[in-house]
Image (tube, rainbow, N blue to C red):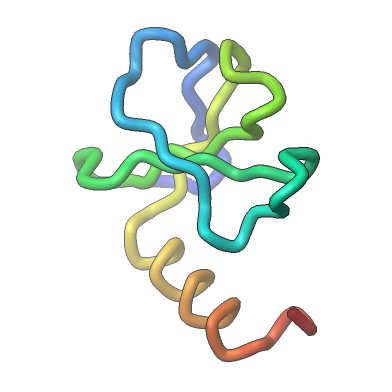
Length: 74
């Protein structure tokens, strides 16, 4: 699966949760769905009816690991 694949509209997808790394003010929230087959849907919480990127599971795991390791200055 390529990282540039996406779901054009996400209202029919259930199970979204906000990232624990999202800002408390709600202005920079990322939402994901856990246990989606073969990919991790990722969307901007400010546009819940908009598109979602489908990130391959291995790529998402690498990204989350890098965030936890402070690779992005957080």
